[in-house]
Amino acid sequence: MISAKEFPKVVGTGNTVVLRNGKRARVVLLNNAATTPPFESTLDTINAFMRTYGALHRGAGPHANITYQKVEHAMRALRRFLAVGDDHALLFTQNTSAAVNLFIRLLRLQADDVIITTNIEHTSNNLPWRFNSPARTVYADCFADGGLDYADLERKVKENGKHLRLIAITAASNLTGYIPDMARIAKLAHQHNAILFVDAAQYAPHRRIDMQGQGIDALAFSAHKVYAPFGLGVLAVPKTILDAEPVDPGGGSIDMISDDSVIWAPPSSRHQTGTWNVTGIIAAAASCETIMNTGWDAIVGHERELVRYAARELSQVPGITMYVPPDKYSSEDRIGTFSFNLLGYHHALVSAILENEYGIETRAGTICNHRLVHGWVNVDAKTQKSIEREIMAGDRLASYGIVRASLCLHNTRQDIDDLVAALKSIAANGPQLQYKPVPSEEIYICAEDGDTPLPVTVHATGREFVNA
Ligand SMILES: Cc1ncc(COP(=O)(O)O)c(C=O)c1O
Image 1 (cartoon, protein in one colour):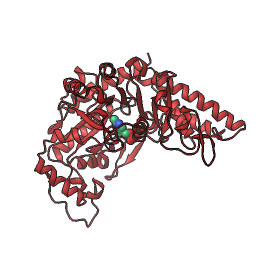
Image 2 (tube, helix red, strand yellow; image 1 turned 180 degrees about the horizontal axis):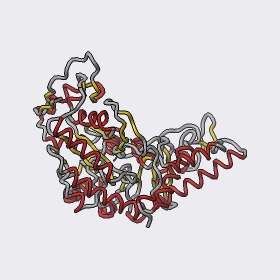
Image 3 (cartoon, rainbow, N blue to C red; image 1 turned 135 degrees about the horizontal axis):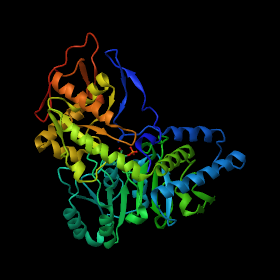
Protein backbone atom coordinates (compact mmCIF):
# COMPACT_ATOMS: atom_id res chain seq x y z
CA MET A 1 0.00 0.00 0.00
CA ILE A 2 1.42 3.38 -0.94
CA SER A 3 1.79 6.16 1.63
CA ALA A 4 0.08 9.57 1.42
CA LYS A 5 3.40 11.12 0.42
CA GLU A 6 3.27 9.10 -2.81
CA PHE A 7 -0.33 10.08 -3.65
CA PRO A 8 -0.96 11.57 -7.09
CA LYS A 9 -0.20 15.30 -7.27
CA VAL A 10 -3.19 17.62 -7.26
CA VAL A 11 -2.93 20.93 -9.10
CA GLY A 12 -2.82 24.00 -6.86
CA THR A 13 -1.85 22.33 -3.59
CA GLY A 14 1.44 24.26 -3.44
CA ASN A 15 -0.05 27.64 -4.40
CA THR A 16 0.43 30.78 -2.33
CA VAL A 17 -1.49 34.04 -2.34
CA VAL A 18 -0.76 37.60 -1.18
CA LEU A 19 -3.34 38.44 1.49
CA ARG A 20 -4.92 41.85 2.08
CA ASN A 21 -2.36 42.55 4.80
CA GLY A 22 0.43 42.09 2.27
CA LYS A 23 1.63 38.79 3.73
CA ARG A 24 2.02 35.74 1.54
CA ALA A 25 0.10 32.65 2.65
CA ARG A 26 -0.31 29.10 1.43
CA VAL A 27 -3.70 28.50 -0.21
CA VAL A 28 -5.43 25.87 1.95
CA LEU A 29 -7.87 23.84 -0.12
CA LEU A 30 -10.78 22.92 2.15
CA ASN A 31 -13.69 23.27 -0.25
CA ASN A 32 -13.30 19.91 -1.93
CA ALA A 33 -16.93 18.93 -1.47
CA ALA A 34 -17.83 21.71 -3.92
CA THR A 35 -15.17 20.79 -6.43
CA THR A 36 -11.73 19.22 -6.53
CA PRO A 37 -8.82 20.56 -8.58
CA PRO A 38 -7.51 18.16 -11.24
CA PHE A 39 -4.77 15.61 -10.78
CA GLU A 40 -1.59 16.77 -12.54
CA SER A 41 -1.67 13.45 -14.42
CA THR A 42 -5.22 14.13 -15.68
CA LEU A 43 -4.09 17.46 -17.11
CA ASP A 44 -1.18 15.64 -18.80
CA THR A 45 -3.59 13.09 -20.28
CA ILE A 46 -5.82 15.84 -21.65
CA ASN A 47 -2.87 17.76 -23.07
CA ALA A 48 -1.69 14.63 -24.87
CA PHE A 49 -5.21 13.81 -26.07
CA MET A 50 -5.62 17.31 -27.57
CA ARG A 51 -2.75 16.62 -29.96
CA THR A 52 -4.89 14.06 -31.84
CA TYR A 53 -8.33 15.32 -30.89
CA GLY A 54 -10.92 14.29 -33.49
CA ALA A 55 -14.64 13.86 -34.16
CA LEU A 56 -16.27 11.10 -32.16
CA HIS A 57 -19.00 9.18 -34.04
CA ARG A 58 -19.06 12.05 -36.53
CA GLY A 59 -16.34 11.37 -39.04
CA ALA A 60 -13.63 9.03 -40.27
CA GLY A 61 -9.91 9.63 -40.24
CA PRO A 62 -6.83 8.95 -38.13
CA HIS A 63 -7.73 11.45 -35.42
CA ALA A 64 -11.37 10.38 -35.33
CA ASN A 65 -10.17 6.80 -34.94
CA ILE A 66 -7.74 7.59 -32.11
CA THR A 67 -10.47 9.58 -30.36
CA TYR A 68 -12.86 6.66 -30.71
CA GLN A 69 -10.29 4.24 -29.24
CA LYS A 70 -9.54 6.57 -26.34
CA VAL A 71 -13.21 7.07 -25.53
CA GLU A 72 -13.80 3.30 -25.62
CA HIS A 73 -10.86 2.85 -23.24
CA ALA A 74 -12.26 5.61 -21.00
CA MET A 75 -15.71 3.99 -20.91
CA ARG A 76 -14.16 0.68 -19.83
CA ALA A 77 -12.26 2.49 -17.05
CA LEU A 78 -15.43 4.24 -15.88
CA ARG A 79 -17.25 0.90 -15.81
CA ARG A 80 -14.46 -0.55 -13.66
CA PHE A 81 -14.63 2.48 -11.36
CA LEU A 82 -18.34 1.87 -10.85
CA ALA A 83 -18.14 -1.96 -10.93
CA VAL A 84 -21.11 -1.94 -13.24
CA GLY A 85 -22.09 -4.74 -15.63
CA ASP A 86 -22.96 -4.85 -19.33
CA ASP A 87 -26.64 -4.77 -18.47
CA HIS A 88 -26.14 -1.06 -17.72
CA ALA A 89 -25.46 1.86 -20.05
CA LEU A 90 -23.38 4.94 -19.27
CA LEU A 91 -24.94 8.25 -20.27
CA PHE A 92 -23.07 11.54 -20.08
CA THR A 93 -24.47 14.83 -18.92
CA GLN A 94 -23.07 18.12 -17.67
CA ASN A 95 -23.06 17.18 -13.98
CA THR A 96 -24.90 15.13 -11.36
CA SER A 97 -27.85 17.54 -11.27
CA ALA A 98 -28.43 17.12 -15.01
CA ALA A 99 -27.99 13.35 -14.65
CA VAL A 100 -30.73 13.13 -11.99
CA ASN A 101 -33.06 15.24 -14.14
CA LEU A 102 -32.42 13.03 -17.17
CA PHE A 103 -32.90 9.86 -15.16
CA ILE A 104 -36.26 10.90 -13.71
CA ARG A 105 -37.57 11.72 -17.18
CA LEU A 106 -36.29 8.41 -18.56
CA LEU A 107 -38.30 6.61 -15.88
CA ARG A 108 -41.58 8.14 -17.08
CA LEU A 109 -43.32 7.74 -13.74
CA GLN A 110 -47.06 8.19 -13.26
CA ALA A 111 -49.08 10.20 -10.75
CA ASP A 112 -49.83 7.22 -8.51
CA ASP A 113 -46.15 6.17 -8.38
CA VAL A 114 -44.12 6.95 -5.28
CA ILE A 115 -40.50 7.99 -4.94
CA ILE A 116 -38.92 7.75 -1.53
CA THR A 117 -36.01 10.02 -0.89
CA THR A 118 -34.65 11.32 2.43
CA ASN A 119 -34.13 14.44 4.48
CA ILE A 120 -30.34 14.19 4.13
CA GLU A 121 -30.30 14.86 0.39
CA HIS A 122 -28.67 17.59 -1.64
CA THR A 123 -31.34 19.50 -3.57
CA SER A 124 -30.12 17.83 -6.78
CA ASN A 125 -31.48 14.57 -5.39
CA ASN A 126 -34.73 16.16 -4.30
CA LEU A 127 -35.97 18.90 -6.63
CA PRO A 128 -35.92 16.77 -9.82
CA TRP A 129 -38.17 14.18 -8.16
CA ARG A 130 -40.55 16.90 -6.99
CA PHE A 131 -40.66 19.07 -10.09
CA ASN A 132 -39.78 16.84 -13.03
CA SER A 133 -42.15 13.96 -12.39
CA PRO A 134 -45.85 13.57 -11.62
CA ALA A 135 -45.01 10.90 -9.01
CA ARG A 136 -45.45 11.61 -5.30
CA THR A 137 -42.25 12.23 -3.34
CA VAL A 138 -42.05 10.93 0.22
CA TYR A 139 -39.21 11.80 2.62
CA ALA A 140 -37.60 9.42 5.06
CA ASP A 141 -36.45 11.15 8.21
CA CYS A 142 -33.01 11.61 9.62
CA PHE A 143 -31.48 12.36 13.00
CA ALA A 144 -29.89 15.68 14.01
CA ASP A 145 -26.40 14.26 13.37
CA GLY A 146 -27.38 13.61 9.74
CA GLY A 147 -27.79 9.85 10.23
CA LEU A 148 -30.65 8.16 8.40
CA ASP A 149 -33.67 6.95 10.39
CA TYR A 150 -33.89 3.42 8.95
CA ALA A 151 -37.04 2.62 10.94
CA ASP A 152 -38.79 5.59 9.31
CA LEU A 153 -37.50 4.57 5.89
CA GLU A 154 -38.75 1.02 6.36
CA ARG A 155 -42.11 2.28 7.57
CA LYS A 156 -42.52 4.55 4.55
CA VAL A 157 -41.49 1.82 2.14
CA LYS A 158 -44.08 -0.50 3.67
CA GLU A 159 -46.81 2.16 3.70
CA ASN A 160 -46.37 2.82 0.01
CA GLY A 161 -46.20 -0.85 -0.92
CA LYS A 162 -46.86 -1.55 -4.57
CA HIS A 163 -46.84 2.16 -5.54
CA LEU A 164 -43.18 2.48 -4.64
CA ARG A 165 -41.09 2.73 -7.81
CA LEU A 166 -37.86 4.26 -6.63
CA ILE A 167 -35.67 4.89 -3.61
CA ALA A 168 -33.30 7.80 -4.29
CA ILE A 169 -30.57 8.36 -1.77
CA THR A 170 -27.16 9.92 -1.48
CA ALA A 171 -24.15 7.66 -0.92
CA ALA A 172 -22.52 10.33 1.27
CA SER A 173 -23.93 13.54 2.68
CA ASN A 174 -22.56 16.87 1.48
CA LEU A 175 -22.92 18.39 4.96
CA THR A 176 -22.31 15.65 7.49
CA GLY A 177 -20.18 13.09 5.67
CA TYR A 178 -22.73 10.42 6.69
CA ILE A 179 -22.62 7.23 4.59
CA PRO A 180 -25.87 5.23 4.48
CA ASP A 181 -25.78 1.42 4.45
CA MET A 182 -26.41 0.90 0.75
CA ALA A 183 -26.67 -2.90 0.81
CA ARG A 184 -29.44 -2.61 3.43
CA ILE A 185 -31.33 0.00 1.39
CA ALA A 186 -30.89 -2.01 -1.83
CA LYS A 187 -32.46 -5.03 -0.13
CA LEU A 188 -35.38 -2.91 1.02
CA ALA A 189 -35.94 -1.43 -2.46
CA HIS A 190 -35.72 -4.79 -4.21
CA GLN A 191 -38.08 -6.50 -1.75
CA HIS A 192 -40.66 -4.04 -3.07
CA ASN A 193 -39.61 -4.27 -6.74
CA ALA A 194 -38.39 -0.69 -6.62
CA ILE A 195 -35.27 0.76 -8.23
CA LEU A 196 -32.41 2.02 -6.07
CA PHE A 197 -30.91 5.26 -7.42
CA VAL A 198 -27.75 6.53 -5.76
CA ASP A 199 -26.41 10.08 -5.86
CA ALA A 200 -22.67 9.39 -5.61
CA ALA A 201 -21.52 12.99 -6.16
CA GLN A 202 -19.91 13.22 -2.71
CA TYR A 203 -19.04 9.56 -2.29
CA ALA A 204 -17.14 8.99 -5.55
CA PRO A 205 -13.80 10.59 -4.57
CA HIS A 206 -13.75 8.96 -1.11
CA ARG A 207 -14.95 5.36 -1.21
CA ARG A 208 -15.04 2.55 -3.75
CA ILE A 209 -18.33 2.29 -5.64
CA ASP A 210 -19.54 -1.25 -6.28
CA MET A 211 -22.83 -1.03 -8.13
CA GLN A 212 -23.11 -4.77 -8.67
CA GLY A 213 -21.99 -5.74 -5.17
CA GLN A 214 -24.10 -3.16 -3.38
CA GLY A 215 -27.22 -3.77 -5.48
CA ILE A 216 -27.34 -0.24 -6.92
CA ASP A 217 -29.59 -0.05 -9.99
CA ALA A 218 -28.74 3.46 -11.16
CA LEU A 219 -26.17 6.02 -10.08
CA ALA A 220 -24.82 9.45 -10.92
CA PHE A 221 -21.62 11.29 -10.11
CA SER A 222 -19.73 14.38 -11.27
CA ALA A 223 -16.23 14.40 -12.74
CA HIS A 224 -15.48 17.79 -11.19
CA LYS A 225 -15.58 16.15 -7.77
CA VAL A 226 -13.14 13.39 -8.78
CA TYR A 227 -10.22 15.58 -9.81
CA ALA A 228 -11.41 15.98 -13.43
CA PRO A 229 -13.15 19.35 -13.82
CA PHE A 230 -14.07 19.23 -17.50
CA GLY A 231 -17.86 19.47 -17.25
CA LEU A 232 -19.08 15.90 -17.11
CA GLY A 233 -21.78 14.05 -15.22
CA VAL A 234 -21.94 10.26 -15.45
CA LEU A 235 -25.26 8.44 -15.26
CA ALA A 236 -25.26 4.63 -15.08
CA VAL A 237 -28.69 3.15 -15.79
CA PRO A 238 -30.15 -0.30 -16.49
CA LYS A 239 -30.50 -0.76 -20.25
CA THR A 240 -34.07 -1.93 -19.70
CA ILE A 241 -35.25 1.66 -19.22
CA LEU A 242 -33.70 2.84 -22.50
CA ASP A 243 -35.98 1.09 -24.99
CA ALA A 244 -38.45 3.95 -25.29
CA GLU A 245 -38.15 7.11 -27.39
CA PRO A 246 -35.47 9.51 -26.19
CA VAL A 247 -36.69 12.23 -23.82
CA ASP A 248 -34.34 14.78 -25.43
CA PRO A 249 -34.25 13.78 -29.12
CA GLY A 250 -31.72 15.40 -31.43
CA GLY A 251 -28.47 14.70 -33.24
CA GLY A 252 -27.27 11.17 -32.52
CA SER A 253 -30.74 9.92 -31.50
CA ILE A 254 -31.75 8.60 -34.90
CA ASP A 255 -30.60 6.16 -37.58
CA MET A 256 -33.18 7.27 -40.17
CA ILE A 257 -35.88 9.88 -40.38
CA SER A 258 -38.51 10.80 -42.95
CA ASP A 259 -41.59 12.98 -42.72
CA ASP A 260 -43.70 10.20 -41.26
CA SER A 261 -41.28 7.75 -39.64
CA VAL A 262 -38.26 7.61 -37.36
CA ILE A 263 -35.83 4.78 -36.74
CA TRP A 264 -34.22 5.53 -33.42
CA ALA A 265 -30.58 4.71 -32.83
CA PRO A 266 -29.92 1.67 -30.55
CA PRO A 267 -31.20 2.24 -26.99
CA SER A 268 -27.77 2.89 -25.46
CA SER A 269 -26.98 5.73 -27.86
CA ARG A 270 -30.35 7.29 -28.70
CA HIS A 271 -30.44 9.12 -25.36
CA GLN A 272 -26.98 10.64 -25.78
CA THR A 273 -28.11 13.67 -27.72
CA GLY A 274 -25.62 15.85 -29.58
CA THR A 275 -21.83 15.79 -29.68
CA TRP A 276 -20.30 14.01 -26.70
CA ASN A 277 -18.03 15.78 -24.22
CA VAL A 278 -15.07 13.56 -25.10
CA THR A 279 -12.60 15.75 -23.20
CA GLY A 280 -14.74 15.38 -20.08
CA ILE A 281 -15.05 11.60 -20.54
CA ILE A 282 -11.32 11.09 -21.04
CA ALA A 283 -10.45 13.35 -18.11
CA ALA A 284 -12.98 11.63 -15.83
CA ALA A 285 -11.66 8.19 -16.75
CA ALA A 286 -8.05 9.32 -16.30
CA SER A 287 -8.81 10.55 -12.78
CA CYS A 288 -10.81 7.42 -11.94
CA GLU A 289 -7.91 5.24 -13.14
CA THR A 290 -5.50 7.31 -11.06
CA ILE A 291 -7.69 6.76 -8.00
CA MET A 292 -7.92 3.01 -8.68
CA ASN A 293 -4.16 2.76 -9.24
CA THR A 294 -3.48 4.66 -6.02
CA GLY A 295 -5.64 2.11 -4.23
CA TRP A 296 -8.75 2.60 -2.17
CA ASP A 297 -7.16 1.16 0.98
CA ALA A 298 -4.47 3.84 0.91
CA ILE A 299 -6.93 6.67 0.17
CA VAL A 300 -9.50 5.58 2.74
CA GLY A 301 -6.82 4.98 5.38
CA HIS A 302 -5.33 8.45 4.90
CA GLU A 303 -8.69 10.22 4.82
CA ARG A 304 -10.07 8.38 7.87
CA GLU A 305 -7.07 9.35 9.95
CA LEU A 306 -7.42 12.96 8.80
CA VAL A 307 -11.17 13.02 9.46
CA ARG A 308 -10.71 11.85 13.06
CA TYR A 309 -7.91 14.39 13.57
CA ALA A 310 -9.97 17.24 12.07
CA ALA A 311 -13.03 16.42 14.20
CA ARG A 312 -10.94 16.39 17.38
CA GLU A 313 -9.06 19.60 16.58
CA LEU A 314 -12.09 21.56 15.39
CA SER A 315 -13.99 20.68 18.55
CA GLN A 316 -11.27 22.55 20.54
CA VAL A 317 -12.10 25.91 18.91
CA PRO A 318 -13.77 28.21 21.49
CA GLY A 319 -17.32 29.16 20.44
CA ILE A 320 -17.59 26.58 17.66
CA THR A 321 -20.84 24.69 17.09
CA MET A 322 -20.19 21.50 15.19
CA TYR A 323 -23.49 20.15 13.91
CA VAL A 324 -22.26 16.58 13.83
CA PRO A 325 -20.95 15.57 17.27
CA PRO A 326 -17.17 15.15 16.77
CA ASP A 327 -17.10 11.59 18.10
CA LYS A 328 -19.38 10.48 15.25
CA TYR A 329 -16.41 10.91 12.92
CA SER A 330 -14.55 8.17 14.75
CA SER A 331 -17.40 5.90 15.81
CA GLU A 332 -18.85 5.86 12.27
CA ASP A 333 -17.40 5.75 8.78
CA ARG A 334 -17.94 9.35 7.57
CA ILE A 335 -16.21 11.31 4.85
CA GLY A 336 -14.41 14.53 5.81
CA THR A 337 -17.19 17.08 5.63
CA PHE A 338 -17.58 19.41 8.63
CA SER A 339 -20.45 21.84 9.13
CA PHE A 340 -20.04 24.45 11.84
CA ASN A 341 -20.72 27.98 13.03
CA LEU A 342 -18.64 30.31 15.14
CA LEU A 343 -20.47 32.09 17.96
CA GLY A 344 -21.21 35.70 17.06
CA TYR A 345 -20.39 35.47 13.37
CA HIS A 346 -22.53 35.15 10.31
CA HIS A 347 -21.45 31.99 8.47
CA ALA A 348 -20.64 33.96 5.30
CA LEU A 349 -18.50 36.36 7.29
CA VAL A 350 -16.43 33.49 8.72
CA SER A 351 -15.77 32.21 5.20
CA ALA A 352 -14.82 35.74 4.08
CA ILE A 353 -12.37 36.17 6.97
CA LEU A 354 -10.82 32.75 6.29
CA GLU A 355 -10.40 33.72 2.65
CA ASN A 356 -9.08 37.27 3.05
CA GLU A 357 -6.97 36.93 6.19
CA TYR A 358 -5.75 33.33 6.00
CA GLY A 359 -6.00 32.13 2.37
CA ILE A 360 -8.29 29.27 3.39
CA GLU A 361 -10.99 28.01 1.03
CA THR A 362 -14.31 26.94 2.58
CA ARG A 363 -17.95 27.38 1.67
CA ALA A 364 -20.82 28.99 3.60
CA GLY A 365 -24.60 28.90 3.28
CA THR A 366 -27.25 26.22 3.37
CA ILE A 367 -25.20 24.52 0.66
CA CYS A 368 -28.11 22.94 -1.19
CA ASN A 369 -29.23 21.09 1.92
CA HIS A 370 -31.84 23.36 3.44
CA ARG A 371 -33.67 20.62 5.31
CA LEU A 372 -30.67 19.58 7.37
CA VAL A 373 -29.57 23.13 8.14
CA HIS A 374 -33.12 24.16 8.98
CA GLY A 375 -33.26 21.36 11.55
CA TRP A 376 -29.95 22.45 13.07
CA VAL A 377 -30.75 26.12 13.57
CA ASN A 378 -34.13 25.31 15.05
CA VAL A 379 -36.14 27.97 13.24
CA ASP A 380 -39.85 28.22 14.04
CA ALA A 381 -42.45 28.65 11.30
CA LYS A 382 -42.90 32.38 11.91
CA THR A 383 -39.17 33.09 11.71
CA GLN A 384 -38.88 30.91 8.63
CA LYS A 385 -41.51 33.05 6.91
CA SER A 386 -39.77 36.27 7.86
CA ILE A 387 -36.44 34.92 6.53
CA GLU A 388 -38.17 33.95 3.29
CA ARG A 389 -39.62 37.46 2.96
CA GLU A 390 -36.18 39.02 3.45
CA ILE A 391 -34.61 36.70 0.88
CA MET A 392 -37.35 37.51 -1.61
CA ALA A 393 -36.69 41.20 -0.99
CA GLY A 394 -33.09 40.60 -2.06
CA ASP A 395 -31.26 39.95 1.22
CA ARG A 396 -29.87 36.48 0.64
CA LEU A 397 -27.68 36.90 3.73
CA ALA A 398 -30.89 36.71 5.79
CA SER A 399 -30.72 32.95 5.35
CA TYR A 400 -29.43 30.77 8.12
CA GLY A 401 -26.46 28.66 7.17
CA ILE A 402 -23.24 26.99 8.18
CA VAL A 403 -19.56 27.05 7.25
CA ARG A 404 -18.34 23.87 5.58
CA ALA A 405 -14.78 22.60 5.48
CA SER A 406 -14.27 19.48 3.39
CA LEU A 407 -11.31 17.17 2.86
CA CYS A 408 -9.92 15.14 0.00
CA LEU A 409 -6.89 12.93 -0.56
CA HIS A 410 -4.46 15.84 -1.01
CA ASN A 411 -5.19 17.35 2.41
CA THR A 412 -2.77 17.06 5.32
CA ARG A 413 -2.75 17.65 9.06
CA GLN A 414 -1.14 21.00 8.27
CA ASP A 415 -4.32 22.08 6.42
CA ILE A 416 -6.41 21.21 9.49
CA ASP A 417 -3.95 22.96 11.81
CA ASP A 418 -4.09 26.12 9.67
CA LEU A 419 -7.91 26.13 9.71
CA VAL A 420 -8.10 25.52 13.45
CA ALA A 421 -5.49 28.20 14.20
CA ALA A 422 -7.40 30.69 12.03
CA LEU A 423 -10.72 29.92 13.74
CA LYS A 424 -9.14 30.20 17.19
CA SER A 425 -7.67 33.55 16.23
CA ILE A 426 -11.02 34.81 14.92
CA ALA A 427 -12.73 33.61 18.10
CA ALA A 428 -10.15 35.35 20.29
CA ASN A 429 -9.37 38.54 18.36
CA GLY A 430 -12.10 38.96 15.76
CA PRO A 431 -11.33 39.90 12.18
CA GLN A 432 -8.37 42.17 11.46
CA LEU A 433 -10.05 43.79 8.45
CA GLN A 434 -13.36 45.54 7.91
CA TYR A 435 -16.00 43.69 5.90
CA LYS A 436 -19.21 44.69 4.23
CA PRO A 437 -22.15 42.49 3.28
CA VAL A 438 -23.19 41.90 -0.33
CA PRO A 439 -26.72 40.63 0.30
CA SER A 440 -27.50 39.92 -3.35
CA GLU A 441 -24.51 37.54 -3.57
CA GLU A 442 -24.88 36.05 -0.07
CA ILE A 443 -21.29 36.98 0.77
CA TYR A 444 -19.15 39.43 2.70
CA ILE A 445 -16.25 41.24 1.06
CA CYS A 446 -13.52 43.49 2.40
CA ALA A 447 -14.70 47.04 2.96
CA GLU A 448 -12.87 49.75 1.04
CA ASP A 449 -11.79 53.14 2.39
CA GLY A 450 -14.84 55.35 2.55
CA ASP A 451 -17.31 52.51 3.18
CA THR A 452 -19.51 53.17 6.20
CA PRO A 453 -18.64 50.92 9.15
CA LEU A 454 -20.60 47.72 9.18
CA PRO A 455 -23.57 47.74 11.56
CA VAL A 456 -24.27 44.88 13.89
CA THR A 457 -26.09 42.30 11.82
CA VAL A 458 -29.09 40.85 13.55
CA HIS A 459 -30.03 37.57 12.01
CA ALA A 460 -33.68 36.81 11.49
CA THR A 461 -33.37 33.90 13.89
CA GLY A 462 -32.64 36.40 16.64
CA ARG A 463 -28.95 35.70 16.92
CA GLU A 464 -26.58 38.64 16.59
CA PHE A 465 -23.65 38.65 14.27
CA VAL A 466 -21.22 41.35 15.25
CA ASN A 467 -18.45 42.46 12.95
CA ALA A 468 -16.06 43.16 15.80
C1 LIG B 1 -24.51 15.00 -2.66
C2 LIG B 1 -24.53 15.87 -3.88
N1 LIG B 1 -25.37 15.56 -4.87
C3 LIG B 1 -25.42 16.28 -6.00
C4 LIG B 1 -24.63 17.38 -6.18
C5 LIG B 1 -24.73 18.16 -7.43
O1 LIG B 1 -23.58 18.01 -8.18
P1 LIG B 1 -23.36 18.92 -9.46
O2 LIG B 1 -23.19 20.31 -8.94
O3 LIG B 1 -22.13 18.38 -10.07
O4 LIG B 1 -24.56 18.80 -10.30
C6 LIG B 1 -23.73 17.75 -5.18
C7 LIG B 1 -22.87 18.94 -5.34
O5 LIG B 1 -22.26 19.43 -4.44
C8 LIG B 1 -23.68 16.98 -4.00
O6 LIG B 1 -22.87 17.29 -2.99
